[in-house]
Image (cartoon, rainbow, N blue to C red; front, side, top):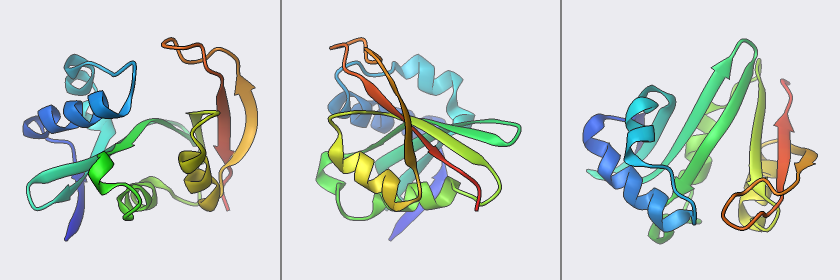
Length: 137
């Protein structure tokens, strides 16, 4: 059974493993340690299968990072992570690679709309990012 929980220090190695598999320019273990309170994890038994990071500023929430282990993708854990953090009172923002069609479709399913483009946003290959926004309902 999938559980969504706050990131615990013991979970950080598994999160870093998913980060390294998922991104060409991954965040370091130190970043997850220093930002531990900003992250939730999706757990099946004792295995972390995904995570989401969010920064909150009065009335706004920025999704800073989200990934699901390749073996667990397209099985609903990304949706569960989003459902856990979304609410109807805050504006939500995120950036996503213009080439990441699966993520864009997931975000659009939850009411995010393209609000702009950040040119050369990703340092690893200078790919552009869509800035996506979800308004309160």
